[in-house]
Amino acid sequence: MRAAAANKNKPAPSTSSTSANPDSAPEPSTSTAKPAPAPVFKGSGLGAGPRHFVDPANQPWVEKYRPKNLEEVSAQDHTVQVLKKTLGSSNLPHMLFYGPPGTGKTSTILALCKQMYGPDLYRSRVLELNASDERGISVVRDKIKNFAKTTVTTNHDPNFNAPAFKIIILDEADSMTQDAQSALRRIMETYSKITRFCLICNYVTRIIEPITSRCSKFRFKPLDTTSTEARLRDICLAEKVDCPDDALAALIRTSDGDLRRAITYLQSASRLATATGEPISPVGVQEIGGVVPDGVMNELGRALGPAGAAGASAFDTVRAAVEKVSREGYSAVQVLSQLHDLVILDPLVPARAKASIALDLGLADKALTDGADEELQLLNCCARIERAVRAA
Ligand SMILES: Nc1ncnc2c1ncn2[C@@H]1O[C@H](COP(=O)(O)OP(=O)(O)OP(=O)(O)O)[C@@H](O)[C@H]1O
Ligand SMILES: [Mg+2]
Image 1 (cartoon, rainbow, N blue to C red):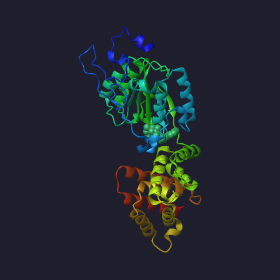
Image 2 (image 1 turned 180 degrees about the vertical axis):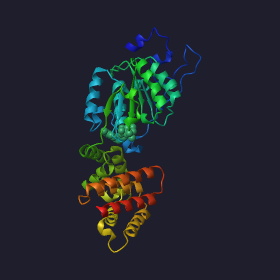
Image 3 (image 1 turned 90 degrees about the horizontal axis):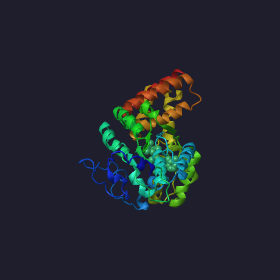
Image 4 (image 1 turned 60 degrees about the vertical axis):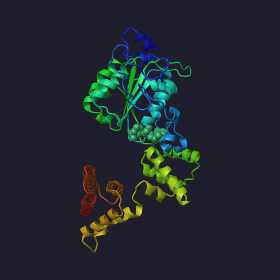
């Protein structure tokens, strides 16, 4: 409200933004003949349309169990603590959330905004843009700038102590072009009184320095085993799913600190269990996660070890093993990732060999990302591993 008052002597960009009913469609600006900006994100921001309600029973579990407030965000204690403090003081800096996928970045900012503004004000005060929206420099100049400079709508809900600024969430900001990021710098400063930015990304190095220096950084870490287990158990309880301990352990191992992945696999495994009438098993979980079973990996590992070459040409043994794995249809990237764990954790392989193998694995991974042939890359990499182990 204070910001709205402060802006009264400026030419108001759009009178509709101060309208008492934030849900009403934006009226055309009174000062110019330009049409109102088009909705930029379904469900929020300027001119958002009506909301669609989906029966929670039909929602994927990741959405159904998305944290609704900061209390429900697990594991990110430091971030949640700081945000809770700022929630009380209604003073928020520009923020940059970064960290690996499925660790709660998007959920945290959405929960914070909901807690801060309440359901009604949320739609007029929060603009969320993600990688599915066009976010080139023209969008920054038009849509983002337009939203940033609109005056703050009045809070009519006494249950929420909404601060006098709007929030622009730029999800997956690392996919924004450098030019678009540069264009943001000035906007962030000019309208900082009435608009705060929250940028979210996986790779913080892809955000330009001038932007990172304007933001408070929050690092989201991969979820630890205890937090993942607690969250999965809660979901099992709510969904009345019987998940044995060993299957839960397999879920945690397979998901690698990515809670979204763990929940998705749990839902698939429980559907499979319902269909087959058998309980959830660790092998079933590994199958769903596309993990190569330990037996197959150990067989490949034996072919690459010193004993693998006994009696036959070393290369032929490796080729036969690689062919077998490829015919099973396992993804080469997954095999490489598991080979990495197998070799690096093997105490019998000397450090020097491990170093050269890690290099080979990295090169093969890069080649696969660039679209190289899966079987050839796997064969090349395995042959090199075998040679490195033999030479050691
Ligand atoms: N820390 C967490 N606490 C509770 N639930 C979480 C947490 N992290 C992830 N989840 C679950 O995973 C889902 C995805 O989380 P979210 O969208 O916040 O991930 P993200 O960090 O934004 O990932 P990405 O980088 O891929 O966008 C949520 O709907 C929620 O169910
Ligand atoms: Mg996200």
